[in-house]
Image (cartoon, rainbow, N blue to C red; front, side):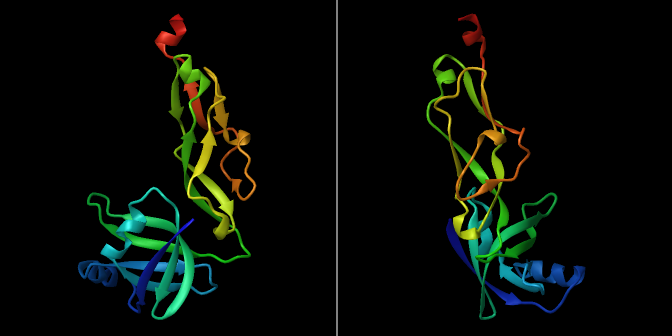
Length: 185
């Protein structure tokens, strides 16, 4: 898993007015949870763009007023109309406790059903994965080579050594749908 370095400054003012003033200064109010005591801080808007606008899941190496923490992004809040980031919540991670994070799905291989005229469809773009943060994957890679026409892959069909999928077992991840051309053949 990739690591993203981010620097922040502690903040002491709370509430709507304080947050509004911070946003006018091009700062984003943030919280760090999971340490027993919450840490409130701010980061520059331009510093988090490469963290937020990427499909990859990353571990964030936070440096807040000289102290260092490892964390993952737990929640983002955006402005309802504009594409402004309002707030970011981080969750501190360590080697003992597993963390649950959404990870993108990547399909590999040419499915047998596609060769027969079907269409491969990715039904679930992200899966919830639980693991120690050092073993979290960048992407959940699924081989669809043996997937026939009209067949599907569900969460219960996926098994990995280093991490566990936390979605509902019956949830569909990918399927090969029959097209009109394949039905006529």
